[in-house]
Length: 134
Image (cartoon, rainbow, N blue to C red; front, side, top):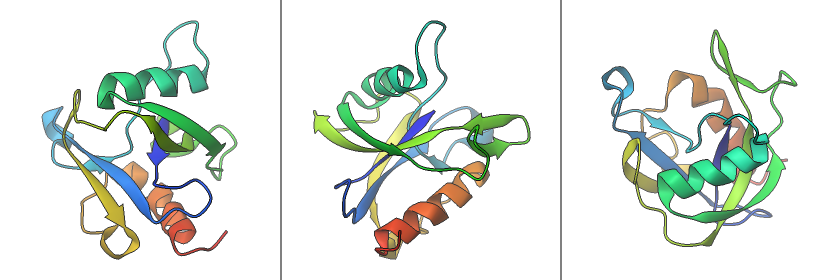
C-alpha cells in the first residue's frame, strides 16, 4: 500500500514523488511512498506506519484511488498495490528510508521524473485529478 501525497485533498495541484535509492535495479526511479502491511495491521494502519518510517510525517488519508482491479493496482505481474490520497498533517517530509530525494511535482512536471513502470497508470490517474477531471 502507498499514498499519493498531495497539497490538497479536494483540489490538488502538487504530488509528492519519492526517488528510490535502493535496491540497485530500481535506484533512481520514482514512486509513491509506502510499503508492505505488517502482520496484524490493516492496510490503512500500514500506510500510516510506512509514511512515519519513510518520510517522518503524519498524514491525513483521503479516499482510496480506485484501481481497475478491486484488489489494487498491478505494479508487477505478481504484486498489487492499494493507494490512498493523503496530505501531510504533521511534519515536513524527508527521505529517511528507501529514498534519496523527494520532489513536489505539478501537472507541468509530473512526467519529468522516471516513474517505476508499475506506477505509471496510477500517475496518469493522478494527473487527471490535477487537471481538475474527476
